[in-house]
Amino acid sequence: MSRIAVIGSCITRDLWPILGDGTSSLLYISRTSLASLFSDPVTSLTLGEEPPPSLKRHQHNSVIADLTKTALRDLIEYEPSHIILDFIDERFDLLSADGAVVSHSWELEVSGYRGQAGLSLARSVARQSSACDLLWTNGLCELASLLEATPLRESKIILHAAQWASDYIDTDGTRQSFPSELELMVGLQATSTDHNRLLDRYQASFMRLFPRADIVAAPEFRLADAAHRWGLSPFHYVDDYYSDIWGQLTALGV
Figure 1 (cartoon, helix red, strand yellow):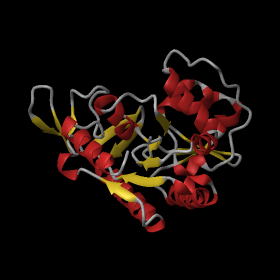
Figure 2 (figure 1 turned 120 degrees about the vertical axis):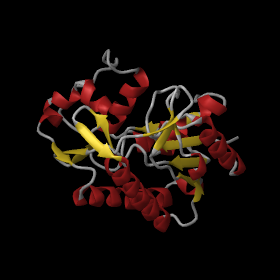
Figure 3 (figure 1 turned 90 degrees about the vertical axis):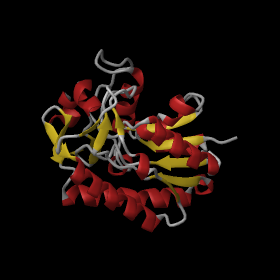
């Protein structure tokens, strides 16, 4: 029986509740970065067991995992038959504090931990910067070493090569275009062109280091859906996208 680990975003995780049998059989590692996964944990934090009112439990758990760096231990212990990666969550800036790197996600921002001693003086590392590129590339190399040095070497590696959609289907069925600039979170603007170029670079770097990895992609169905369960976003796609990716993953034994 397949044991699936996802290191990525809801674009991959959503395949199971939309087309599969729920997410109970998944290990889902999200709201992180390859740069963050392999850094030291953040110190001088008081972490709550219960999520704040603004976050759901799974969102809070993702923030805690990114701060305490428990995801890799969980991944090894899970012994997945397949590891699926997508890089859509690699859209956030990073925070650097005393050797620790974390993803500056919306969930972290509203969690309250950003104001604690361990992160209050953290330096921001812009996603579209050479410093971030270096941190991410180092994380990619660490991932290759981890997979080679642990039982994870037996896992089938799959890259879900995704991109931001330029158009979406509105609730009235008409096709519309996204504006050139979008808001990632309050005060943080981004363009789909810049992030798609970034994704191209990340995916190309990944395949150079993992040439035997399988790739799933559905560019012909890369269209966002205003009626998506999580709302309108350039990476919340129409049903045909998920159906096509699901078929490709099924063919790979997922």
